[in-house]
Image 1 (tube, rainbow, N blue to C red):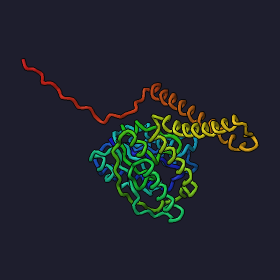
Image 2: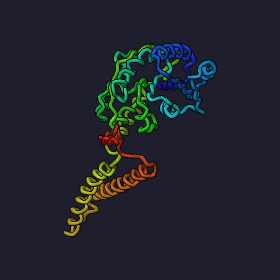
Image 3: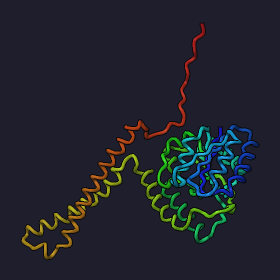
Image 4: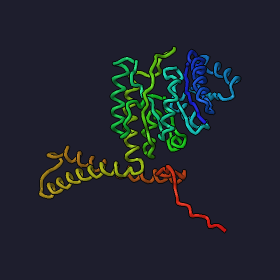
Amino acid sequence: MLSIVIPIHNEERAILPLYDRLTAVLEGMGKPYEIIFIDDASRDRSFELLANLVETDNRLKVIRLRRNFGQTAALSAGFDEAQGQVIISLDGDLQHEPEDIPALLAKIDEGYDIASGWRKNRIDNMVMRKIPSRIANWLMSKASGVDLHDFGTTFKAYRTEVLKEVNLYGELHRFIPALASFYGARIVEVPISNVPRVGGVSHYGIGRTFRVMFDILTIRFLLTYFTRPMHFFGKWGLIGLTLGGGIMTYLLIYKLMGYEIMMEHGPLMVAGGLLLLAGIMMFSTGLLGEVMIRTYFESQGRRIYAVREVRTRREAVPKD
């Protein structure tokens, strides 16, 4: 069974054309499916149109959020509600063409866990969207070790068991492949079409680039040090303690030799004291992180690994 998850926010002009094209594609594939729209507190007639469609199609479900929580939360709500073995997410503005769904599913059928869309020929503004996007995608690829050209697109197909290993928060929906790679997900990129919006305005601008940079740092830390935070904080703590200890030891010897250190080396003493304090704080943060990560895994019964499959040789049953 396929689950199609579509977050929307003020997309009334695109909803009916999207629904018609989507159902035509899905029915042509001959597989059981469900369509889940998540209305992220639209202020136009989006929910009204979807509510009318629900009355005519029992494979359609509409979730209406209490307020505008953002695309990550909307996708998370759809993923939680989905019942299919494969989940496909796409935007509700028709910039993602439903006709590309079979290409994504073909890669899932080949054995991949995530088939990620790649807007190979983007139609966006060069300065405002294309260049910042290319820089962000390159940084994300280097930070995560996942070789994708387009992390930003929502148009992806997932095996449901992969999404169960990923907890979404903030604005990390675009980085699901990177987060899933932590558990060994097999990821492939599939070229998709990129067409102009049917109506309305984009919810993203140049300001999003800075938020993406912060997300990249978060992803880098999570993928590298999530289960061993002391390795990150301890390293910097050791550097601070070594430098600060060295400075303070030098000044102590200088003082014991009878020299005045406050007048001659006051700033150096302050720097040494700050480095010592910073080193102690880093070590303390690392220890707290170790305690918290153990509490996280043990209290929720989560594992630090993911099993793809288990095989065993069965003994032959003796015949009577």
